[in-house]
Image 1 (cartoon, rainbow, N blue to C red):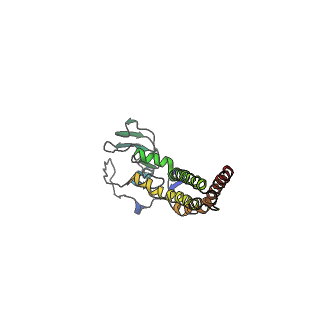
Image 2 (cartoon, rainbow, N blue to C red; image 1 turned 180 degrees about the vertical axis):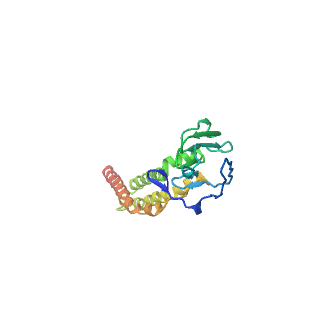
Image 3 (spheres, helix red, strand yellow; image 1 turned 90 degrees about the vertical axis):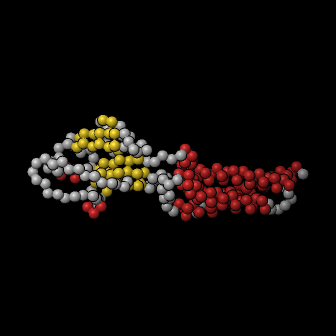
Length: 235
């Protein structure tokens, strides 16, 4: 078991790893191992987080283990990198970086990067789906209440206002719809690096409609009643 953090453990099986076995004669040997690796992709959050993970812990069982030299060449990488070990002793992590250790710095070496996204995507993430829905909902609610007041002033004798009733159902519905659709909107702006992993959030948001509806209907009814009352008094 390789412990990355106190709360997170990763179990690696030999079938999941690249490894080789070789019988070596006694003496000094220099072995060069070269291979291509695909990054791990963490889909938690809005933007994918990529990492290369290299297990250092097996070196602790080498009889000949004395020291460890790590060199990372990131000159061709277009994204800022980070690791779970100390800053490079020589060079720059986003260029050519080198470390020398007399003992293992960690069981699992992580080389992490997260692609850059546009400023628009960053701001949309800060607002969040609920923030976008609130902005749209407030604008529509203001427009609806304006129409409610206008209609009631023009028709103070009518018992019911169809503008008030219809809008009281449609505005909360639009708010819930915009809340759900905002997830896809933000993902689209992020682009191919969007995780698009939001679970069953749409399912739970739908249940907000019957909670919002009576609250908004009550506000609209009070506004309509007050305007109707004041219009009759003026008349």
